[in-house]
Amino acid sequence: QVQLQESGPGLVNPSQTLSLTCTVSGGSISSGTYYWSWIRQPAGKGLEWIGQIFTSGSTTYNPSLKSRVTISIDTSTNQFSLKMSSVTAADTAVYYCARRMGGTSNFAYWGQGTLVTVSS
Amino acid sequence: QSALTQPASVSGSPGQSITISCTGTSSDVGGYNYVSWFQHYPGKVPKLMIYDVTNRPSGVSNRFSGSKSGNTASLTISGLQAEDEADYYCTSYTSSTSWVFGGGTKLTVL
Image (cartoon, rainbow over the protein chains, first blue to last red):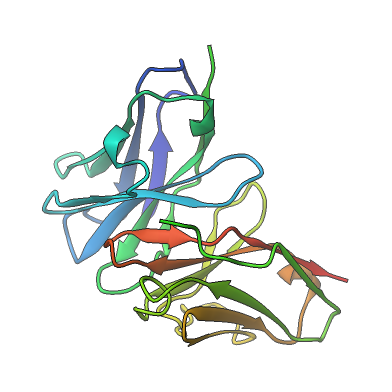
């Protein structure tokens, strides 16, 4: 059974860079045709797709966040990461990592989520 | 990209059926059969209920079904139960090769 777990600082200063890592267990991050995504949910608001990465390193980002977001993958550690620059209070949210099966909209596996607060 | 449009809330009595709509455009919902629905209890992890418009993952009750007509996808829950009370979100693939979510619908079981 695949499991995903987010990790990273829970507090980030405004204008700084938010960095999160998702560790995948129960399977290789490089096996199969899967896309590895980041999704967030600000308090009291809906879900927002941030972006995704394929095993090859190919990335796709939410157009509204593209200028500030970088997603990378490290197959040697079975992890993928999110970096979001120039954060503001509006970036305060629960951040989830998730796996989607390629060629489908099957987002079956999600991490537990981690709360990131942007505040000084 | 604009969020997909969902009703803010829907309600129904136990045993009844309800339908939640998810309206987009021809560049997302209407253009692709890549629509999913998630059930989300506050503080918990979103659970996939429907994918590729109509497919139900293993373990999901057959009381949940999905459909699409034009630019609107729908999630129908039949035989409503108290445990179905949650937030529901749709998501769709877009022509920008990205994904967009709906604003979410709060389901209340009366």
